[in-house]
Length: 304
Image 1 (tube, rainbow, N blue to C red):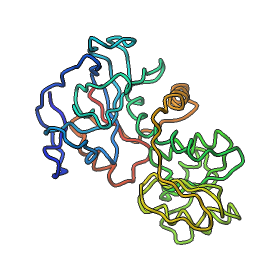
Image 2 (image 1 turned 180 degrees about the horizontal axis):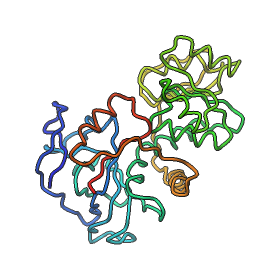
Image 3 (image 1 turned 90 degrees about the vertical axis):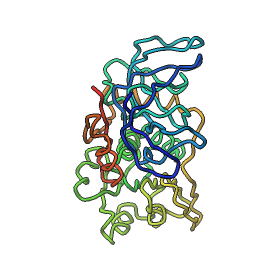
Image 4 (image 1 turned 180 degrees about the vertical axis):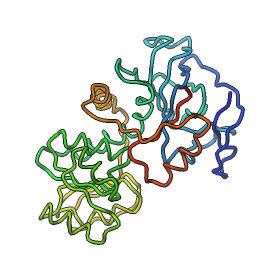
């Protein structure tokens, strides 16, 4: 099969190559990939000790093509979304991917596979972030890098819960943020943006979510004393003024929260915004676009 691969552990070049289809173990499911989401980690998120060439990609949606002898409760032909983080057999940028059934979620009726492919990674990050922030109705939240895939979901879900949201993005995305439910949109390139947020939330926001690299320290400036900052970017950020600073956590099981999010997307309550859908042959163009960190919502590649 033709798939997008890394050829070794040190060179981060990705190329389209002919590779064997993955074999299916007794405890695995083989997915025929219909579409896959594109993320900033796809090029370099490679498990240690794997064989090369290694198929990249962390998320997809498709149809169950085969089940291992020990698999029950999932039928051939079922429409599913899948994550392949850390999968030793390879990722989702291919016609086929073999994964453990714990990594798949049945796609509900009414949700198309292209939209489903955009959900797993950004959706998980969004529900994890909101769970960690634990915000209540009436509180204030600042989201740094709010127009990307994670921010798009966080802004909507937080606003639905009654949280007042401000977010940073380029000026071209300000109306977009307001359409998602943000009360305030600021330009991260404007040196006065922290003052604008402080004017909106006089004592500082209750919490901030720093998604983009380089944003945790500036975001700290708009958080109130004894507030809360969660950093998705992974940048180190020393605390000050009693602010609780923590790195984005990874819970073992987010299935309940994800099920709620998927249901809301399938019914239209929450929008899974896809900026552009690329054909399989243009997957590297999509990867280069998302690596600029200027995509609005999500980018998806389809094999259909």
